[in-house]
Image 1 (spheres, helix red, strand yellow):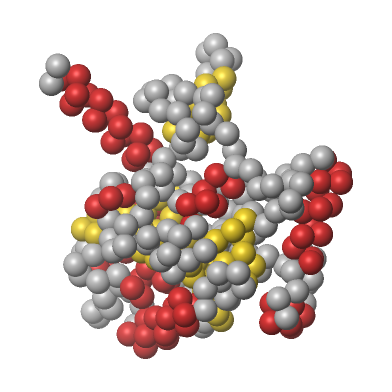
Image 2 (tube, rainbow, N blue to C red):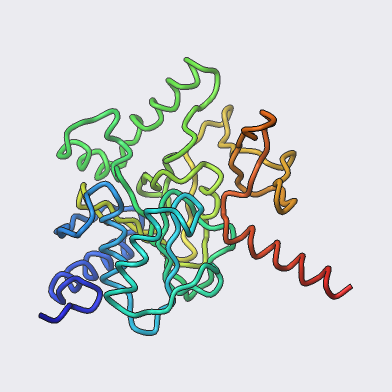
Length: 283
């Protein structure tokens, strides 16, 4: 029995591509699609994986990351499935990849016009915490009635004195639709604004696709007296690379108890370490 290229049958890939085109044509709008069964459980990236499998071609170069790491269990298994059913080349370097699938992070290296970034999304509906009815959320989107999203942020300010959403911070896309950008950290939200690459977001369990086309306006929701702010890492230094101003993980040394920081995007950190090694060797 022969295996389909990229696992999915051609009719499934065609349907997903059509829905993807609609999502690109209406930035930020959630397009329903017939989510397929895959050899991984729903909730582990099936939406992003279906997008990748429907778009990947034989000439593509693939990169898969999970929370900034190319070597996590989830990233390795997804990459192995795609590579074993397509034979495409793979890379850890963001700048070399034509197709990037990611969970919870937008890479530190800015995307280029030829690149597609696929984000895995567990909950695509930004209004779900204030409205459980799918029919009513569709009506709210149709009327551009997003007071519920602002009320959620306002309640955080009243209770804690500041907005506490550290990830999956809602954004307004193209001045029209409020969108859940997947659980990327707030630090990554500004990277979507007028980004040169195509960003696709897939939710397999919820059966939705949405998109941010290149050069699209994306603004994080905020108030005039409580503007949107990202996590600050200017005063933090990566223990391995010396990098600063990038998104970092806060860790604790098991032996000394000392708190230290590492660059979350491991391939970016590796590139910088290699550049430093080459520069030092040339001196």
